[in-house]
Length: 87
Image (cartoon, rainbow, N blue to C red):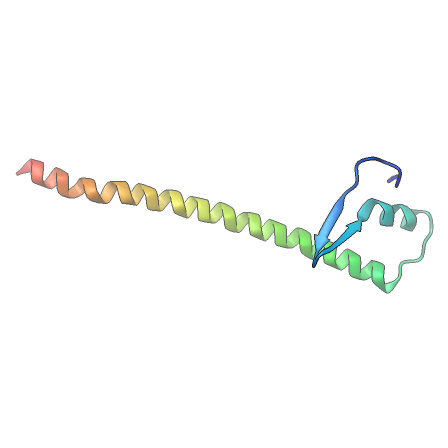
């Protein structure tokens, strides 16, 4: 499935460690026995993916909140202006 000679490599950054995921998967497919280190790597890779999803959702939510605040900022000063013009 994965060839370690491919030019495109997937790296997962976790705690300042860079891991070559395709090479690990390639050796596991060839019959290498997973060690505790491989299990730790897979756990950390899973956590990194979950953290990136959570981080993306937080950024998206902050963008939505920022837009709502900008709309509120523009509506509030206009209301007294309309009230003074109506008099």
